[in-house]
Image (cartoon, rainbow, N blue to C red; front, side, top):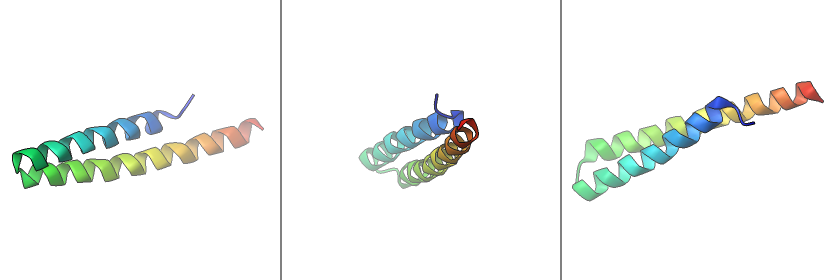
Length: 61
């Protein structure tokens, strides 16, 4: 089972993409920037979860 951070990070990344798109469509540059920031945060959180998964898998083997 993937780490909780990976799941949350993926969700945050997708939400950020939606927010960025909404900002572009409506011309709201602040919303667009928030979406981009959410995507970066989601990617980092996903990477942290990946490291946790790797460490957990190494302990099992």
